[in-house]
Amino acid sequence: MNKLGIYIHIPFCNAKCSYCDFVSSVCGDDVKAAYFSRLRSDILEFASSGKAQDKTVDSIYFGGGTPTSVAEKYIAQIMDLLRSGFNVASDCETTIEANPESLTSIKAECYASSGINRISIGLQSATDSLLSEIGRIHTVYDFIKAADIAQSRFNNVSADLMLALPGQTVRDVEKAINLLAGRQFNHISAYSLKVEEGTPLFSTGYQPDEDYAADLYSLTRSMLEQYGYKGYEVSNFALPGYECRHNMRYWMRGEYLGFGVAAHSFYDNERYCMTSDLKAYLSGEGITEKTFIQPDGEEAAEETAMLALRTSYGLDLEKYRQTFGRDLLKDRGELIEELTESGYVEINNGKLTLTDKGLYVMNEIIVRLVL
Ligand code: SF4
Image (cartoon, rainbow, N blue to C red; front, side, top):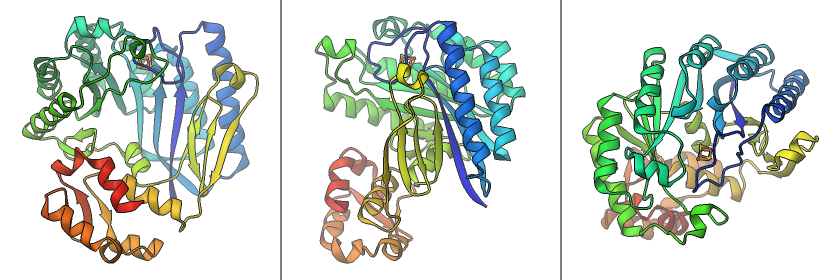
């Protein structure tokens, strides 16, 4: 049976962080109730269409927004619907994103009994003043309490860190990594801040210094490696066996269905997304863009290479040649040789991967190799 992932977008937060341009906002209970009603009917409609009858769902991901900011009954109802409407594997990796201030023991109990088995908590920084400056409404102590709750109930707990925040020091990054790795978090994501236009942070004029951001990233990588984590994707690190199945699906171009406002899907060779306007979504608007991706065409070839090169598994050159008729060793042989000699890429067992050095110039290498 083919495998399928499901993403559920929860577009609500208890406050808006100054750097955030995700589709999320602070809303009242009536909006939340209306949202979940629409979400449930979308899921039900798809499930009853029978289109996914021959698929096994082996990953579910509640992202946001802040899924822990809504009443836990909503999450349990969605889980019930998914399990009755789809073939959900018994070992389905089922993740919920959490923010420290809104994860409670009661919620965690409810998540666990509804089938959720992985929780991902946003720490972002280990310094209270920095958290407050970027509009986070939790403290490091709140995070520790949330980690206690999560780690006592779940065997698979992840945390997010941000790099290159305004005023962030090396010491802050070290503290955060020591905190997470010291508590044996199974998985850690570390994203470098991108200041998006339209956010309050953008209007301050702050832009991360690229060299400093690269230094913080390099520190993160080497500290996590020393603690036994493997960087299996450019921003993601895991203890052995704890790579995130759902995210791997995105990088390996597996199929996934997204439900909720602004949710993206890749299904039956089509990429599509729902409206990102919450009001429009609540008044019935659905898919706004749909693109067919020819399975062996140019676009699929580019996507495959770009996504695979982000991961430590790399790009299987022979499989790539067979699927897309692109022989990179022949067509880009000189370039690959040059990049190998300079230490940016390597080929092991027929798989082309970026080295640690190559990761810092990943976008440039990908453009030269693939486009
Ligand atoms: S909690 Fe996450 S989704 Fe919500 S505003 Fe902050 S960064 Fe954005």
